[in-house]
Image (cartoon, rainbow, N blue to C red):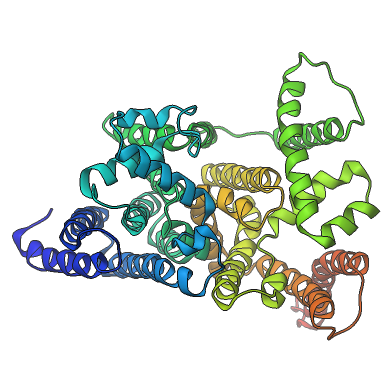
Length: 529
């Protein structure tokens, strides 16, 4: 796939950018130049080969180039700007966005400069900054092999950026192979431009690697379904092994997704009551866990429900505490609602994070205000498509596709809810957990976008209208709170008013459609027999 002609432009580009990047870091310039150039050249070779293999032509090339430029530019820009215009914390003064990345990278450098085996990274007792060890192992190995003279955080960020872009050709290939170019185009652009993914992929985080491993597994499974060849499972296995190194839990989630896809993709007709039973079981499980978390019911300590509930309760208690301590608004809401409703409230609040009105009116340094706005705008553009995905899935014309899309919609939203509760409604951890399954979410959102473009369905417009109403109400609340401008309104009134609009908007539109249909039927001329 790679020819000598490709190397004529690829090598100068990689070596030239590597030389510039080496100027920004510590240590000997020539070692930095070789390190950055090696990572860039190998990464560009992989992207070029993946682009040609995916067969997306010029369109896919533009998506890959735009995604790569954004990620590399953000990685370099944040590394240089944070020490100058960020907060005076040790993390940001060192050029890191995330505290977890700062601590893990420090231990990676420590491991790389020791006489210990790199496999020691998987010893959670010796190195506590990475509970699974995969990211620590990769970072330490990169330092030991390419950057032995100095710790170069930007080198790891560049590596993450290149790997994250590699997910795009695999997602394109899978979507186009299974559903056609339209869904492939929408999904690929979402994966390329989603701001939270850009931020994670330009940092020393494990999330971009997990997204790419998910795309590999997705392509392998789609290819196997189409051709029934064993070699397709190598892609699935490669993706799962990568996930096991970085986060075994995500490997299990991926197996659940693929297993459900296989089951629902078979030639079988599920009775209507099967959907009702599944929904009832899910709601009952949520209700029982909520009651057990609040102490309203007592379940045998030896039951599976209690084992899960005990673990989740400890996680939830800590996250509830963190959430309550971090926001005066949350403290007030916790005072006026029953204890049993606090966890569901945090779940919903986490789904809305990062909150766009808060990002608009927040007091912070300009750099973080821009980042906060981009993250929030990205999520509030993405969210209606994920919500409308339910409608698009339910109304899919092909029965097999309908079952598959309903399954993917269910898993996507279960994961969003788990991320919300696990992150305690936090504006950083919650979106970070959520973005891990971005490949699947982008696929669902791409399908929803294509469906509503080609069908006269009003639900996407209704959802957007409900979201706009909620944003206007809470923007007013934040404006009066921070700047004393707008209509004074308490948080209880804002929540009630928002809930009212959420109910009235689809109801009013439905009544309007009935009125138009009735009026149209009355004004049509009658045929003469």
